[in-house]
Each structure stands twice: as structure tokens, then as C-alpha cells.
Length: 99
Image (cartoon, rainbow, N blue to C red; front, side):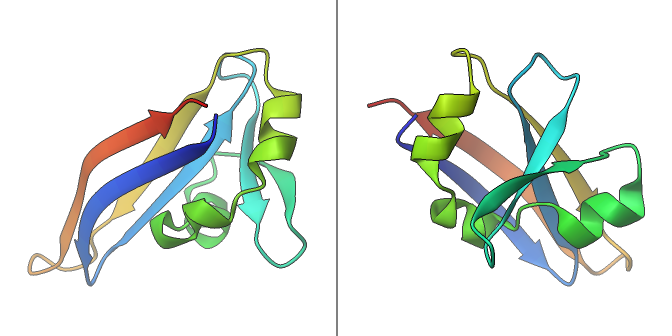
């Protein structure tokens, strides 16, 4: 994997993603401060919204580390939060680019 692109439209809401490298058993977020992957419980919506990967930050992922962790399979989980009826929160496309 050389990059992941997430096309979205978010106004007033929030979109977060997480990555699984073991068929969906364990999900990870990427801490852009420490530059390491951290386990994330996607069933805890508050934690997912607080710690999931922001689409704009997906380019900061350490893809060398990601590739060393995967067996060639990747799953993405996402959560959308739209607090007000006037908010817009759309996931349009996910593109995984291979080297």
C-alpha cells in the first residue's frame, strides 16, 4: 500500500476511520503526534470519534509500518457523526493505492 485516499464532504459533522489488518478482529488508528499505530475499540463510538483517523490526516500514515503489519489484507471502518439536521457528512469514496 502506497497511500489511502478518502473523498468526503463534511460540514458541521465528523468522519473518522480505522484500519484492520487481521480481517476485522482488531482495528487501529494512527497517532500523528507519535507516528505509531494504536489499537482502537470501534464499538466505543465516543473513543472512535475522538481517536479515529481524520480523513485529512490519512496521508500522514507511516505506510512502511502499515505494510509491515499487514498480510496483504486491509479493512476500513468508519463512523459518521451528524449532530444537526443541517450538517453534511458524506463518505464519497475510498481509494487504496498499491505500489
